[in-house]
Length: 407
Length: 123
Image (tube, rainbow over all chains, first blue to last red; front, top):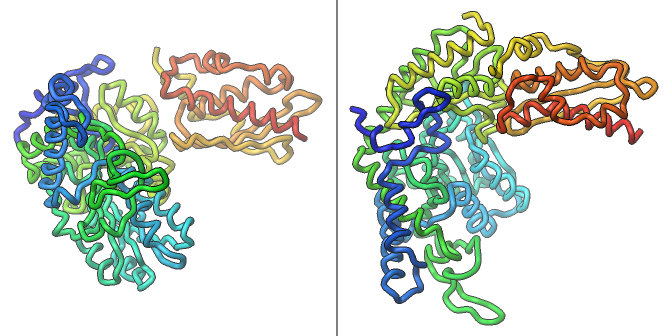
């Protein structure tokens, strides 16, 4: 893939500590192309009004723009618009499932299965739900190659299993999870399945009908959109079996002094004024991604990952936590340098203008399982280049020099 | 000025007062959940003065060097004067610029010491 995209991202021209920025923290959040920023500004300059209730022109325009992004979002993951709800992030989307579906459907003695790869967002809501209901949490373990142990998963499934919650790609190891297989096994036992697709939707085409999951959550900001917008896909047949997770304006049908009735369908999940402008700008992000070509992004990520692994694995002191086969990986690579804390690695990289993440990555049980206190992590997007990895390797060499590491 | 000065790296790679005290007046464990840094600090107090100190830690160069530098400062000092210590004194000991993102790292040992001193009072 030719890299003509950099020019669309003004921030990538910035200098950090005297060096041109190399941004390798895309698993945290992506950068935003100018088109998205312009869409945000255009909304406030020309169409700003509240939605769903105004008769005036601006309100109708704003409503049309907001609802148009629901259609685009649905198209993007092959869902129907009425199966899409907007939240503030993927975390809220997952919490919505725990509250709106979980509280009603999980009972004492039931079992919820999660995996050892989960981000806290797809772990803590289920821990709390299990605690509240007297249900048990079961964990799909990891293999030594950082993959989910599917044989162990099959053994965990039983008639007690009511819900299976898995990530589609780990934000620490980059492991791509065969969610379709996991979902179909869950369904065999009558359990519902939740997919945390925050690391996937902006990198690889997602088809919710093929995966056949019951819920799927992701965040706009990891796929060129603004912060403050999350998406929850809910399989249509389940919507009526769910209660709202927030109450207030816009989600109600009629309100009396003592009680109220709620909208049917997805509208019951969007109480209050939503993040209209950012949702509208997210629409521009989806258009941009379509123009990049979703089929190209994962291939580009993997090409960079293979190159980064080659560059970094030359050094004896470096440990890389990544599945061996490239087809099991997305564009995320965690690593550790023996004798150097990952925070110090990230600081030295920053001194060289290279932005990476260090720490627990909101996945403390997983990082503990890797046998280190924390990791350093580089993660790619389509605007990254091989030269970016060369710059990262140069920064790595500086880590060795400063900490007197022999390789 | 460089964050990774010779002093910082020396204290990180060769921490002073490393280990545990079998005879101690207080033990505290401090944890920085954002970074995953941890410290276990033992102090032994005789006649209102710090008689001995030891720590075991796992964390970044800044947090571990700050603790190590601090242990050198406190032996022989009065409890009352140590309680009056300020974060600025830690920055002075480190003698490198601490960015807002590294404040917690720099002050982890200071916080461990203050909590250890507080726990003495309860006894």
